[in-house]
Length: 185
Length: 285
Ligand SMILES: [Zn+2]
Image (cartoon, rainbow over all chains, first blue to last red; front, side, top):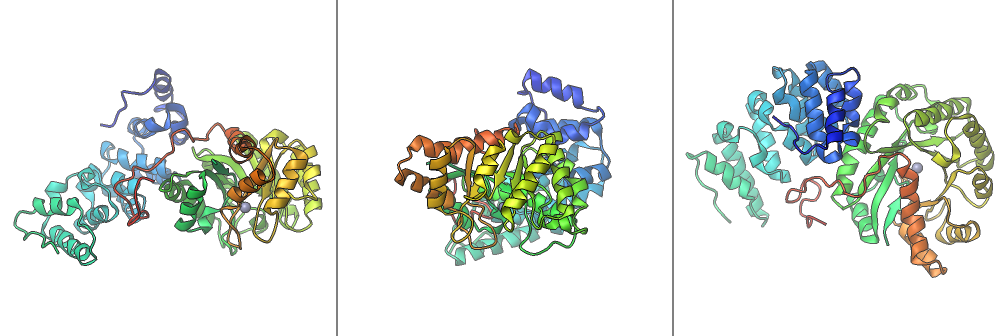
């Protein structure tokens, strides 16, 4: 559970005052200005956890949110009583090129609900744009032969271009023991 | 030389521009919302533009060590198009975002009743959301447009010290200065102001409430004009502190009126080993 023990007393008092209260959506937007931007993720997730919004409300907050608000919605998903109905938000974030959104999208909610094909592509995208894959929830459980094949092909492409193969590729391959190792160029 | 460009349209620029700007000393900027280079066909198009100014552009800028804030508004040109004006109803939600430091750019284009209405409504939004306003003066019929702008301002709740009048030149700057508003100059290669004329105005009127920007949009423009004005000021005998005042402290003071300027800790995205944009480029600039 994402909570923030380092919140200042003023920040904590503000958050306790707005959590679950009428107008919490406005507080969700302005949270960074009240608790400090370093604590905004945790404060926003707490607001969502208390409010328990349905998928429709979450979708509105995400679609009309700035990058930080979107990230908070994604981070909160595994802590909310939701089935797969919020998946379109995860898929939207995975289409973006903002590494912070992609990392936030690949938490336990995606591990639980995201379709295997999209999930593999998301993992490969992480390797591609440099999001460390240890941030991907459930990686060891969901990694399969097809993901290993994609990682190996990616490694071959990098090697052909004379570029280094990211360590994360080897990590993916190590998760799929039956798969033949990468041939270095 | 540390530079804050208070008005520059980065959506129309490349990553090369970000790189050159950073190398020239630009470490902060404000991007006002504007048109797409061609008319929009719906209000939803503004939503995508606002999304870019609140997400993608700050992300791009951060990779070059530049803090990106924005000003949001329905622009004067498109205030005349009934397909676009519904965005006014959506604006209040966006004006609450952390990185929004002004309402802008607003003002007049063809000086029509629809523009009157949009200007007045958005000045009121600025007052209600605790934001200053970036008001551009029209390119055609500039002096008459300035008079009309000042008349609408006088009727609004927003005091002149929370308003900047932009795209000023020798024919409008004195009247604008009398109003008590902040004064801004857009420096372009062939149009609006150039470096030498800008320096001459600064010498004549002083540095108080003066802002200089490169605006850099879809047309022929130069995102390094702020730096070139700084160099021209030094060459003309201004001191380093004078340059710092015009190119850094003044814009920080003006947009600081929003209470939302975040410069102390550059919000850099966690630069994992190079990301989609920086891929292949040295990380951690
Ligand atoms: Zn402009």
